[in-house]
Structures are given as structure tokens and as C-alpha cells.
Image (spheres, rainbow, N blue to C red):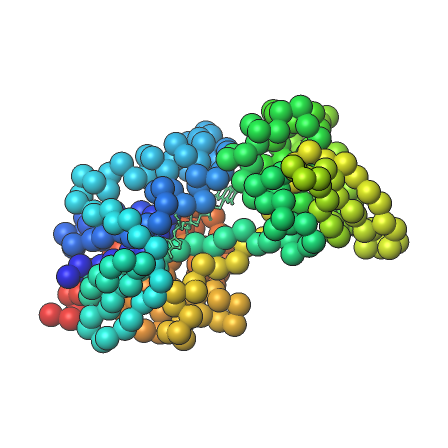
Length: 304
Ligand SMILES: Cc1cc2nc3c(=O)[nH]c(=O)nc-3n(C[C@H](O)[C@H](O)[C@H](O)COP(=O)(O)OP(=O)(O)OC[C@H]3O[C@@H](n4cnc5c(N)ncnc54)[C@H](O)[C@@H]3O)c2cc1C
């Protein structure tokens, strides 16, 4: 029986684990991949206090290192569902069932698909959602980045170190990204823009992507463009399927909590990107994690 089981080892889950373990609780973190979550897909982080800039994988390792020292147990598993039996919660993975007094859901969010013809067919054959993972495969090629937010603009800049050119296509006539990221993109000679436009179809041959069909949303004009790779950053959706039967999410699947990270079910907390909230960043994820780590301690004290 764990005092708390944390699902997901991104910045939110790791921070919750640190706080709960330092409060002397028995803590397990169930993770389906490498610790770090979305940070592992992030090239450069320069808005995490204390670091001028640091790569996502490096920050992941630094956050994970102290967990062992405080006795947090790392458990590999893909969580399928959660059962609430009052004072006991059950976490069901593909091959085991774990019991805990409390649960902290820290499963984050995943990249949203564009939903156009050719996207699924050419995923991993020129279509990617992770510049850090795949960028180096596209040396000296013309690349397309779809989206206009922070991730799109930041990762477009990262891709210019490999690519011949990087074109950002955005459905509006201005970017949503932070001003500092925009300024850098506009100053980068390798970055071009296609404004007011959307990708209608991703095309390719037997082997890989060859280009896209684009529609200008203002004029309706259709055009064809050749690209060797396409990176998609058009937003995120919550990873919350495992709690969909618990009634703790809104209609889009974001988990609803109060300021203490408590869901409507006593003993079940949620932190980080999976929560319904304004700003999904590493700093806000670790803030949530700290509050929940302390919250489970108080919850367990009150059970006694
Ligand atoms: C390309 C990109 C660039 C970014 N750049 C920045 C930046 O510069 N600065 C910044 O502050 N933020 C940035 N972000 C956002 C930041 O990475 C996220 O806000 C943060 O990682 C959220 O942390 P989290 O712990 O809530 O979730 P995540 O980091 O998403 O971690 C969730 C974890 O849960 C695990 N998980 C999910 N489902 C299951 C399951 N069923 N069973 C077991 N494990 C599961 C996942 O494998 C994952 O490890 C960026 C994001 C992206 C995609």
C-alpha cells in the first residue's frame, strides 16, 4: 500500500514525488516512458528560473536525480484505469494493480493532430511532432512547421540548425508566440512564413513526404509546396482517458481541480498540463506538483 501513487513522471509528477517523499510518505511514480515527460521533446528551455538556458533532456535528468535519494519508487507501467474505493484507490496498469491511499494524476497533455489527409500515413515518414527527436534526420532540407504558438516558433528556430530553410505556416496573419520568440524568428534568415493559410493535405511517395497542399483562408486560393519534412505544433489535448469514468474532467477531458490540486474525489489530486488551467509550462507544473505533494501529506494526516 502506497501513501501516494503518482501517474506520470514529467515535471509535475516528479515535483509532487519530491515533496511527498520529503514528508516521509511512501511514494511510487508510475511512468510509461523516460522521466521528464514533454521536457524530453524540448530543445531549449530558457524560462525556467535558475538556468540561463538548458536542454529539456538535461533538465529532466536534474529533476529526476533527487527522487532516488528520498526513496521514491519508479514503477514502469501504462496506466489503463483508476478505481476509487473510498479510503483505498486502485491503479490498474496493463499488467498489475497497485493500491494507494491517494493518487496524483500527472499525465500531461499530448500534441494535437492536424487531422488532414496524409498525416497518419506519413507520420514517422517525414511528419513529426518532435523537432528534438527527429530534426537531425532532415539536414539540408526544406521543412514546414505548422502552428503559430510558442512551441511552433521555438522549434522552428531549433530546426534551422539542420535545415536549408524552415517555413512556418499559420492560419492567422500574426503569431501567437511570445514576443521574444517572434523577434528571433523574424530575424532568422532561414525562417519564412506562409500567413492566413492552412494545410489541406500532406502528400508523399512510397517512401516519404514530398509536400503539402495549402489553402489561403482569406482568398480561398489553393497552392502546392514541396517540403522534405513537416513538424506539427497545433496545440495539445489532455491525457486523461484513464479517468474518464470518474467524472472529474470537463467535456474536453481537462481535469478540474481547486487551488489545492484536489479533484472532486477525496484523495485524488491532479497536477500539471492535464489540469484545466491557463498556462501550461514547466514552472506551473512544478508549482502544482509542490502543492499536491504537500496536499497528500495533509490528507493522510487527516485520515488518522
Ligand atoms: C515542443 C515543446 C516545447 C516546450 N517548451 C517549453 C519551454 O521552453 N518552457 C516551458 O516552461 N514549457 C515548455 N513546454 C511545455 C512543458 O513541457 C509542459 O508544460 C510540461 O512538461 C508539463 O509537465 P507535466 O508534468 O504536467 O506533463 P508531461 O511533461 O506531459 O509529463 C506527463 C508524463 O505522464 C506520462 N504518462 C501519460 N500517460 C500515462 C499513462 N497512462 N501511464 C503512465 N504514464 C503516463 C507521460 O509518459 C509523461 O512522461 C514545451 C512543450 C513542448 C511540447
